[in-house]
Amino acid sequence: MFTHIVLFKAKEPTEENLEFLEKTFLSMDGNIKELKQLEVGIDVVRSDRSYDIAIITRFESKEDYLAYDVNEFHVEKVKKVIGSYIEVSKTIDF
Image (cartoon, rainbow, N blue to C red; front, side):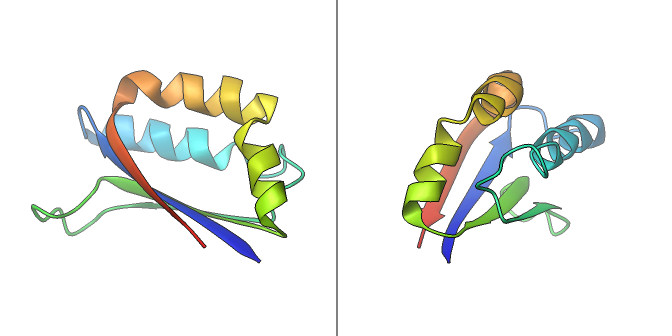
């Protein structure tokens, strides 16, 4: 199993914007064959160290993750859509 985790800081972390981001991330479920598991969470602690929203994605292999990363749905319906909402993101892959 290969895991890809992304933490996002929103430019404007309003409830409406975070719900839009959550909905956009969840739209990947069932639309990308390589994506085996998807979890999305909005931060509730809101500390100085907190990021606003996170996704945890799981794949059969690193190769499946790499195919997901360039998948048309992921690029066109997620990455391009969220770009103007995101200030910064950080990832870890293992």
